[in-house]
Image (cartoon, rainbow, N blue to C red; front, side, top):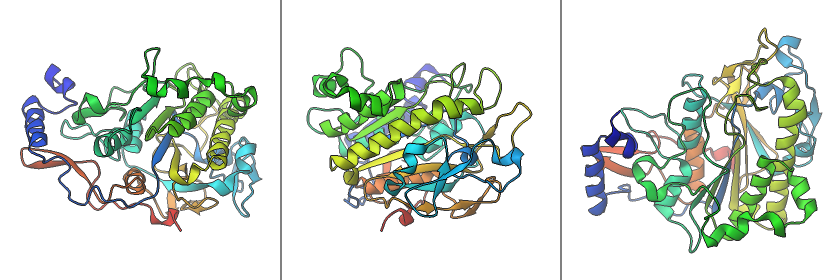
Length: 389
């Protein structure tokens, strides 16, 4: 790829210039239905669970499977009859009425982290030198920022090296640098400086979220939504190397089941439960979507090192707020968590759901070049209707 292509998000320079000309002629967002208000969510928080959580050890447990599949954790009851999750999430179990579990999410891309990040954050893999923009960047482009605050904030910063050499779906790409997410620093705009400063929060609140980077950034995400930011992305980790993450291969420099029990499980349990509870108590959950997803699942069978490897064929994720009916499970996997059994869901459907609930109908065309439309999602992608009453 040339320097010009890098600067223009993967488009060839002549194509990028063509796109700019079309923008000036009013041809961006060429779908006349794209701007229709269809949903009730006004904000969205995306929690990117970097590393790929194991479905069998989190939200789709298989207690009747052989030991080499079911793993070391036991399922526990939640406050929703018939719904059980892993024992590493005791607080989440008390809030299951607030979120939906999707147990049959899958994609067909290569089992590498970068491909999964792209799909879960854009709805598409990059193709023909086109790298598609992050959901939050698209929303910023289509809806614009609210007065005095950025449209999309990325906490604490972009995903770093996780072993691949591909785009990770966290850029605005061909939409232009003006639609990139803001990454806060000491020079952050005055409009959100106060939201990022947690000194006004009580010690009890900060403790409830967890005194770790992820927990404190989830608290900042709540405060950013309160300040009017439309979209917040929180990366739970920035790498999978030499740090305890969801990437449980079972050998160094990766993580183990003990890391789920002692570090990652409690970290997510505290932050996620506190975030949903706070949004609910402040009257914001009905208007704020909260999505928690990794880039893929893990192999159902435990590997020789005592961990699980990459598995895009089936994963579990969580969706809450913005009109989503909590306390439900959508889709199911087979007896080992290897493949969807009922109601498989694609990343494109997840992204389509966010777009529609935030007031973007259909399949928006966001640019064209050479007579060819650049779309954020494949044709025919529909939102996940079962999530809503």
